[in-house]
Image 1: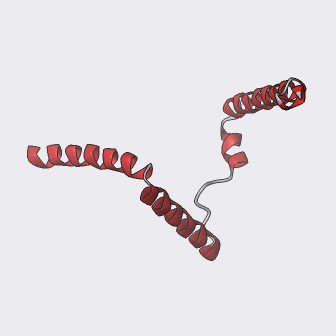
Image 2 (image 1 turned 180 degrees about the vertical axis):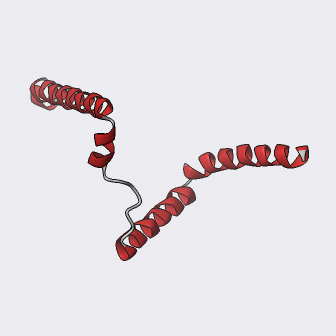
Image 3 (image 1 turned 60 degrees about the horizontal axis):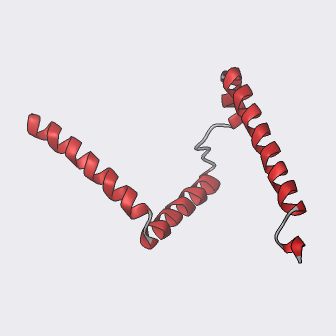
Length: 95
């Protein structure tokens, strides 16, 4: 029994390490893109809704929704400030 437990844990660790390495290779990127396109095709073809609607899920957790909304607003504000700063003092404008 211990053998099966240890081999299952070791196999899981080795499989996870292999997956994380494989994901960064060209073949891995191609493979995961094909799998994603297969999932998308199946979802459209058979009408699967794999992920629940975000608003329905956030209705269950209103505090989390408030925090996410405030973080998204901060990100938008920071991106606008970064774009404004880059457009006024950009390298291209110095010529």
